[in-house]
Length: 405
Image 1 (cartoon, rainbow, N blue to C red):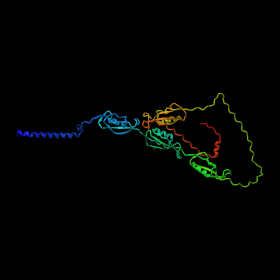
Image 2: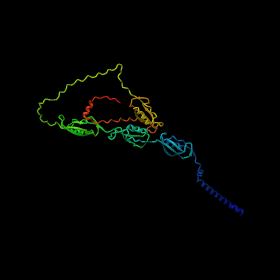
Image 3: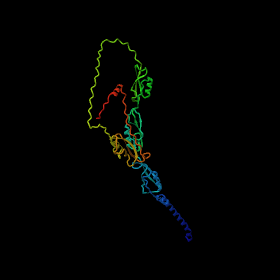
Image 4: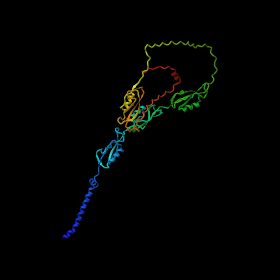
């Protein structure tokens, strides 16, 4: 090959060489883009950022903090706890102080109040039901009182929410308490006609039975007697018996001639003079009439106690209990305040208001509640009407003082 031929082929050889090199470069570039390192090399290394601390913040506050650092909120979960106010971040992943890739997510765990299981208070007394609810951190809504002939007065007949329902601490529970059998006063129907008496008694919620009797003073058809007497309190639906006059009795037969036989009826003895009363023993000189001793009790200290223990301590010294609630994250479901204060001297039966601590956000407005009213005393069931003879004996009999054993 001449020099001219060699010079003619050199440009072609150099061109193929560039083609081969270009193909090799493309192959290397394609292979590199199939790995993370290759993509980073192709697009530039992705920047890493520091993870900020968001524990103690709300979810909204945490989102702002993370986005300001080039991150975002990842998965959000909830955990029950009484140690942290509800709605705050109690854990984050990745942890604060580590590094993470820009635009990656940070998982958050938020605190929520543990739910309380509503106790079964149906059949309990009103006072015991309120105590059972307070032990769980549940507030008793205004009590509903209804007449119930099947349940003793003072017992709970219904509740809402029902037993075993899950409710947040600080939630209100409504209880319905029996007032016992509906009672009413017997109206006065003496002197009314039978029809009017029936209408009045029926309108009062009672039933009527009628008996007939003769009377020389009450016109026929009018009521001459009734039982129970007017004004007596009896159960609704009870029977009131009225005696209706049938007028004067028939004329008696002509009297027979009086007997001439001397009377043998003994003459009653003259009324004897009662014996003189025994003279009372004179009081000893220097003695003073006895004065009633004033009885007071000292209010025990129940601060820091659990609800049941505090109630027992107060009732043991014959004091009544009413509940209130206030936010206090350090003393949840414990007594944080009492009124009157410990050591005060009060009369037996005085009401002591004890305040129970709840999580700060468990009450709607974050303020203490008003004290719950003291449960009403159980009403005494009035006895049935006594016969007239027994009533008279009861009224006229002298009272005899009794001495407690």
